[in-house]
Length: 461
Image: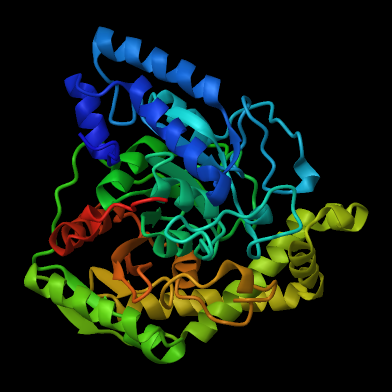
């Protein structure tokens, strides 16, 4: 049997007794030992803690069977989720050696599900800016080609899943930070509905827009992870109740689904590469063959979403960091410090205007999509660019495809829709209305099954 498993495959094998959680963890550790010197996905690898947890899971499963699909499964956490067992640093000098007194809600839920925490994963510093080369650890690199960018800021999360170091990771997403690296690293990344996954114990960036969600090999795996992670939590003021996702195999579905194509976003507002455009058209063809009904939809331009979202992030991130910026600015990386400092120039009136514009944009989105079930776009313009060419202001003035769904709170997922001429992944973005995360995942899974890209495992190094 292959040593690469999807989460769903591993869960079935563990339940059937044909796969040992201990051997699965050892396989992930071996792959990490072999590859992470070039990929740099982990900031902290808890080798002994993971093996101990795997042994406990194996004994419990032999005695009573698995408590759910994540029981005995190796997982990783973006290093913005606090844990008692490992430092939480946000990839920054400011938090070197910081160990929280309590676990984050995400860590609690993974432990309750029987998952095996492998360690903490690289991020962009405080989940902002891009890859930093002046930080205590090097930036994560793309496993498909270590000279290429992972996307961010859940960089280590996407890299670890793509490389098979973990079967699922949890990242944060404020303006595309789950979906961007998922697209560039060729995995699936879900930003759930706003408030569906508790952010208690997650280091904030911009609380109005912050989300937590899973990255995994495919949409089915994201669905299984979401079922373990979700739930109302009084510790997070944004937490909301949604009908629970089912911790069971996802039933793919696309027949009769009404899909709107946000064509202007990736054809004129921020034109994607020709290979990416061709991949989108091929994906549209696959969905039509599955019985979906596709039509173009006119939405507010990306530049408007970008302007509102940028002001909100700058203002809120500055408020989070202003005391450290005033007293310990030298401990930040240059790119993070410079971007955070811009927030000092966003007035309360500017912020209020951005929030009002956000409300207007979301109202226009709701009106345009009233008769639609799914929105289709992209989350990146093409293949991953060289990591050495990413500057501190890259992307700052360029509208992204992902931020509209942070502003709206809609669930959105990035999935692989092919490969470009350099052999690197291309990504598709699908979004649904708030609370319809499972419906979104069913449509994504239907596309993945029909398109066949998930059968192409990364053959590493």
